[in-house]
Length: 316
Image (cartoon, rainbow, N blue to C red; front, top):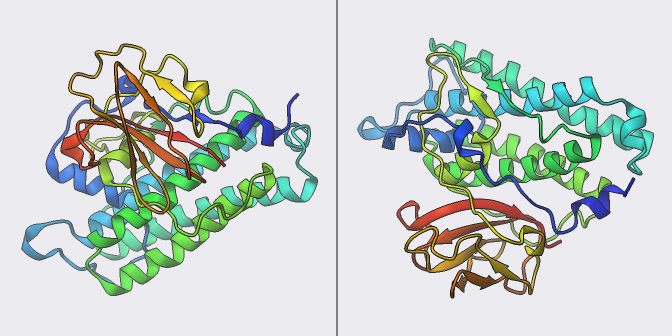
């Protein structure tokens, strides 16, 4: 069996399974999705309301809880399925496996903390959804490589959600959580043989893009806990294994999606855009860490310009 470091190189994954995602979309819920990844415990008995009737910090708490439910369930199911020996067969030592299990314990603690925080505001905490982790948990190796991406997406989501938080106390609490998520991701990178700090900056990811990556795991949610958001379509490539620096990528159908002009690479240090010509684009140089690839109309990753994606590539 190949080592985890080999498995993870050139990983191009988490293209959304759109059929598994909720079908409805509205603008308010799109903004709430950003909060799904920014997880602050409330600073007091009530959370601040957003000015002008917009997103409140209670919304942020509840959608943060949605994300933590997902991560906690992922680790719980994975560790119920695979033994320490399964992970050690990948090249991890016993201490690393115990630390990986500790990541799951931390996510479960985030869930209980957020439930208490939402309840303290007088609001109802959202419930866990039904998830489909079949592909991600097909083996211990796939569990580890997906965990690496999940933690990276979590960090990016916190950064993208930070401007939506109204209370400075809540923002401080969110910051205390994103640092832990970053530690999770750095540890998993080390355990998989990758550089723990691949870039000088982390990458912010916007709400709908975050939900696109998460939606593939969600089968259904209880009433009142469903994120009514339409994810972006998946990126269909002829050669996803070529999603590495300097390689030419080919869309499965050069005419799809209509209006496609660029491959966008949302990365530490700034976004890069490669022109799409006859359904082909080149992965640019100077990419590192986890990079989010999108198909766009123009040299912009604003929601109105995104036609497909994101998917995640890992050039380093």
